[in-house]
Amino acid sequence: MSSRAPLADRVRAWDRALHAVRAYFRQEGLHEVSTPVRLPEVAIEPYIEPVQASGGLLATSPELPMKQLLAAGAPDLFQVAPVFRAAEQGRLHSEGFHLIEWYRRGRDEGAVRADVEGLIGAVFAAFGRAPVGRWETYGFLGLLEATASVRLRGDEDADALAAAVPSAWRVDVPDTMPATARDLYAWTALLSSWSDAVLDPWLAQQPGGVHIVDYPPALAALAQIGSARAGQGSAAHRFESYIGGVELANGYHELRDVLEQRRRFEIVAALRRGHGLQPLPMPEAFLTSLEALPACAGAALGFERLLMQARGAQTLADIAIDPR
Amino acid sequence: MDVSDLKKNAKLEIDGAPWVVTDFQFVKPGKGQGLYKCKIKNMLTGSVVDRTWRSGERLKAANVESKKMQYLFSSPEAFTFMDNETYEQVELPTEVVGDDKYFLLDNIQCDVLIYNDRPVGVSLPSHIVMEVTECEPGVKGDTATNVTKAATVETGKQIQVPLFIKQGERIKIDTRTGEYVERVNK
Image 1 (tube, helix red, strand yellow):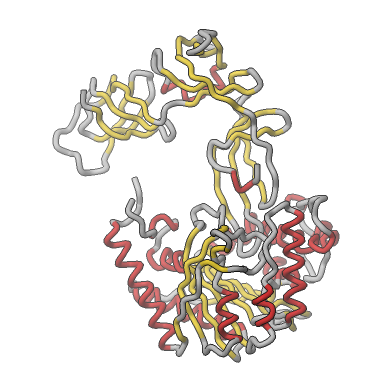
Image 2: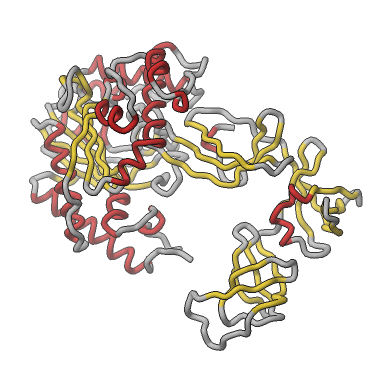
């Protein structure tokens, strides 16, 4: 027996959440756009597999086209974008979903992190739910040490990481992995092991919301690297936000250094080669536009996961709009 | 096969033995590796273990073929089937048949799974109709609520059924979940 509400209720809830999202951003002065779903190029990311679509790729995120608009002179933007990621299926994963994605020019990741709190609060209020409660912010390395007693500096290479982590987490870097991708492999493997064994259960216990900030440079993705916000040394100006143990959002102070961005895409491309995954085109048009990208911060928040939380649902299937 | 092809009932060869995925869960932290958390059952011994694979790993699919057979009879040690084409009889050890024994009606047609010439499992039709041999008296009219009662069907399996089901009636059961589906009118 399903715990799903009838379709009519699910449709009304979906519509209500969408209204609340749009009202929040309009009030904040952002402008709604809609970028193409089929793209010639997408960001090359370690474990996000695009769906091929007759000569193009379905958007895994609207990040590149939105940044290209900003580079060409667009004002602050938001959209609720359909995105597709092959072979992701589970309680909290679906091959097709919607990302709420937004950008603020002239701001850093702290501003869009505040938006995450504001947006979640607005959608919860639309459902008559009490606010999330207190939001806590933790540095990545500090939280790793506090929850798992693993002490790292953040700049370890693959061999140093292997020596520092608990034996149950140790994952050998495959022999097929090119030398340039070994550190990225080791850090992403560590992130997954920590999340699964320790972090996710810990997050599920937290009464309010949690932001994790100051990611190790190897996990910077498309964020700038600078001095750590919460701790010491240098860190990626990237954050992830969780409520009820569910990851909802990811944001960056956006990288604008073309050479550094190309270098990072090449590392990920090497990691993909090491796994024997399909090669993806280097996002040349995006890299060309990056020179003109104004200083900005952006974030992405999963619409369906937010609706799940607002409705107190346990799975994506419980809130999905489908005729079943 | 790629790890992303993993799903429930996928058959894998690990250290020379065939395994079937009995439970499957996908988790993935933001921008981390996906974890494919599985329970897998050794198709030769029936033993079940937890196993987690990561994004990018490669697996070997087990070469398991299925043959149409008819179930004949059982002993405490084994269940005997007959190949529809060759009339050859094959035996499947009781521990390998496991809880599927509750769906093996006399003479039922099913697929017997063969791995390296060795029968290693049975694949049942997704739904089977069986007679209720024992249950509390039926309650008339209560077709709307989710309240259930215990019943026993002809193979000895215990199952939860709605209150209106009566002894001697035939019901459809989902062999994958072992749950009641609907009443079957004769």
